[in-house]
Image (cartoon, rainbow, N blue to C red):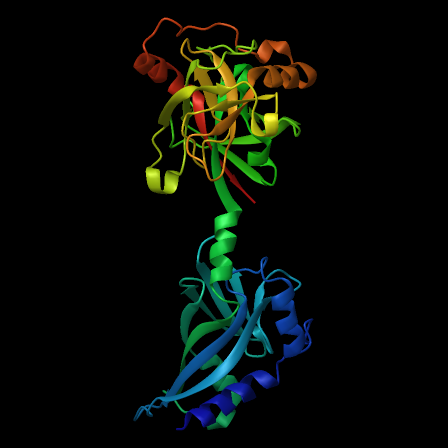
Length: 377
């Protein structure tokens, strides 16, 4: 039995139950939809070259497999499900944020259904195999039905548009990480630019526990000075072992920084860098910042800058592109202004318990109060 004949049977079985079309109404409009929304598409949406292999069999023999190629378009319909254009009887549902989807097909008159689990590999290809259910064959073929008669299909989808690099960039942009540190009352300090576009903020490392993820919400911000204070809802108050120093530190003072830079390649262990205060003003002579020589990398943003006595004197905000060991930190006095104007002075840690400790012991004491922050949108 030729594949063309099998395909005609399939079309016959579905044509009489086709549902009313929804937008988009034609392939040209659908292609424009893909182009206009290319950065917001689900990875499964797009144009596919589809290899279709089909064969038939009855109680006596199996017919040779035949192949053909078609172009299919998958898009998100108004209900939020994914559809194959011009085949309203197929519904595809994504499973969470995974690469797995449930592929469902229904024959409404016979009420026959199939449900398959598919995996979208590298945002480009997926395969699905199914046979027309016996119930549908009996219903549609009537007296022509023969026991043991089957029609089997194997579909191999390969995306031709959009280019998979679109999804790689999208995934890269949708999740990012930084550093923050604790102050009294279950509040966490970080940078405004870290949380600016985040729909979800997760904090890890509270009490040194990275397996536990704490949800956080933005409590207050200072856009001008790139500061944000987060609130953790589910932690008990703790004694902070360091304080905030609001007077201006001198050029040449030793400083050290804790943070979680480049965790994808450098690992998720907290990292120490050391240096000195290079200048009392920051980028473009900004007097609300220090220039520091401690090496900084993406992910250090929002981390605390300590002096040799263990006082927090600043908050890491950026590094200078094209230079080595030139970074900037917001002065602690700016954080005090934000706290006093938006919260209460009670959340400012005032007691320094590490001033007489060695640097290794200072780090051991404070590292459980310096957190890994993961943001997503």
